[in-house]
Image 1 (cartoon, one colour):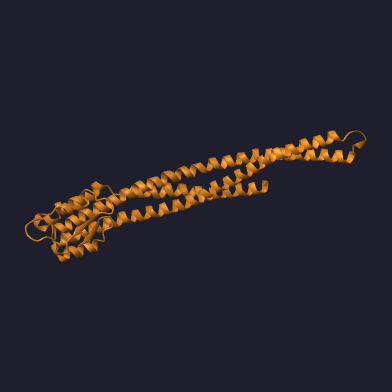
Image 2 (tube, helix red, strand yellow):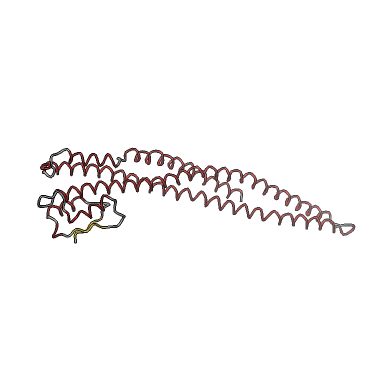
Length: 280
């Protein structure tokens, strides 16, 4: 039993020694790194809108400005998507480490099961001691057998020694198990906070990608309409929805006959990730 407990404690310690530093490193380095590099909504708006507002109306939709806006759009989206990728990888690593950390809990449960078994043996040994004592009391007078008496006394001594050994083992190993359990709580706490932080940052990144795509879509439609209007009135409601952040899974539906071919092409080439659209 003692050997089994020692082995389980060693396995738990090895897992903690390997996993804990990785959890702290991933949480401290990667998550903070991503947070520091996330652009603000105002900076995105400024970058994309400055290029448009700084030009005269007749130049807003010129090839030069279109190319410039597209370049800004691709650069911004590429940066944010890259941060999203890093964050997803970090989340994946942390969840794998979380699975390994769970094994420590499983090993502790096995050890506690062994403690229960050992504790259950103590009453049994005490009964054996009492039975042996009763046996000695019956061995009196001519019927007494010295060898039998010695044997019963040996059994009592062994049972007492075994009882004490079990109690000492439980006391010693319980301290070690409590120490490991306490030590495991630190990386577990870091994990919980880190995974929660990733969830919040992921939502922020998704919203920013939607914002970037929304500005680009707005500009694309604005610069691909016929007539004097700077914006196709048929799609004003759709654009309003984009700017108000569409709920996940919602689609903007465009009617192909109402869009110019180059508009359709530009929207398709944009490879929108957050804004869901469909050409009807």
